Image 1 (tube, rainbow, N blue to C red):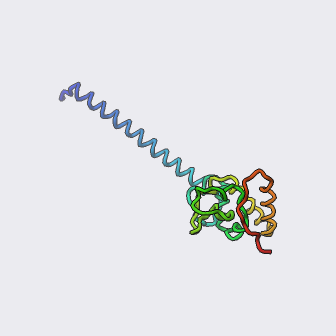
Image 2: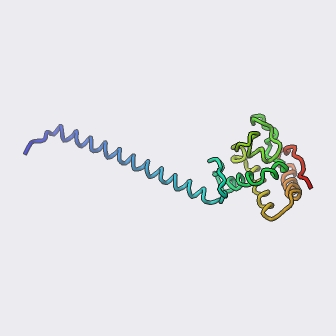
Image 3: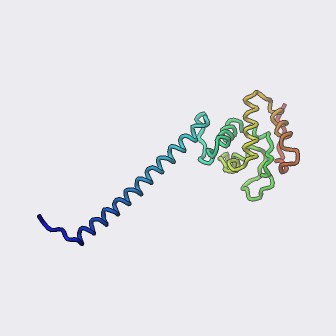
Length: 165
């Protein structure tokens, strides 16, 4: 039986410890990625988008996702709904906001992140979406939004035309 030197045994033990630590790190990363994938899949499953492809930021919460779906389905109606979040005075935005639709889309028709981080835009959009599902007329929806937000607790709205009769 060959003799194994003490130096060689210590070197092998250090190597084994290094491999074990690497294995643990790899396992933690795999479990973390799996948990993230499950979380994303289940969070997106909460809202039926009807096959509408939305950007990742539109999945922050159920209300945000529902609002972006509403913005897709109700683009024309959103052009008759003023926004009361103050976006009309936000000089850092790349274009002027004229109505609620502009909080979800830019002038080129691409989604924007503005509404995803704005509670007023989300609240307005979910109110509009709810009223549409209840068969409310566009003028009634507009009047409801104006009554909800024009009491002085919100910034001035966008200069938005009334919907046609």
